Length: 339
Ligand code: ADP
Image (cartoon, rainbow, N blue to C red; front, side):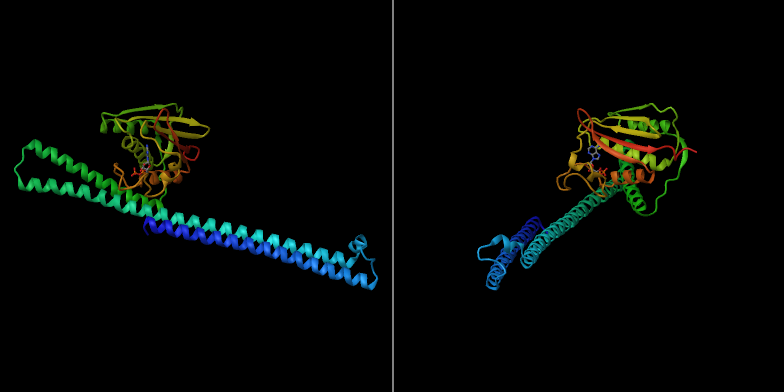
């Protein structure tokens, strides 16, 4: 469905809903007045009858209001009035709830369709471009006699591309596993040393970047899943690099709060708008559209991070960094990781 069709469908459904509400209000008012008119007619008839029978004097309104027959009629009239009001309220509430639920699932469908389109576009690109460049390198090797330096340079590029492919396949497999059967394999480790090593690796990979690590943990020995932990931290560090306009400046802090370990990863990159902060953890979700975005990716990274953290019974929050950028804050409960 294209954008124009979506807008037309939405407009049409809103018009139908508006028509239903107006029609219903009209019928409610009509029922109300008809009920009132019927009551007035019955009341007047009853009064004439009573005067004719000599039960009340002509013009003696007070005596008529006291009569049990009139009071019964009046109670019946009031009861019907209440019935009309409560049924109308019930109908309007059901209609509003129904419309809200339909709208919500419609929006979800549209989101899911957009995401799978985004995913298809990005995954196609992410799969095709490394394959194309590896192929080009191999073709060059076969066609031309190259200097050893050139062979080394092209070979390194091709290796990098195979790494990219490998990472992508690993991400896809891990996300499928996280959807179904993932259990963290806990083992004792020095979390301070472990994260410091990852930060050193990132600094070596991006020499122009500025990576720092501080830890105030008194007892850095915890039980955690090495693969899971390194996947969480590396994904967040790589994102910090990817979403920084210039050379990345990333600070990693390890602190303790009650019985939790807090890992915070702060970058000074492009930042994340408030309305996107919840969505970015969804599978295949990427901010913006695939046609206009310049960064590479699949929208799997933060999904993997949040699922891994969930499997560790921790949580992740995202807040703005000052003056710019983003801070991801992971809270991991340590009591269950200790022996
Ligand atoms: P990918 O990076 O492959 O797009 P992710 O799941 O890692 O997928 O991230 C989802 C989205 O969240 C990204 O498309 C990006 O817009 C946003 N994002 C993630 N990390 C950061 C960050 N550190 N700074 C700014 N935006 C970020």
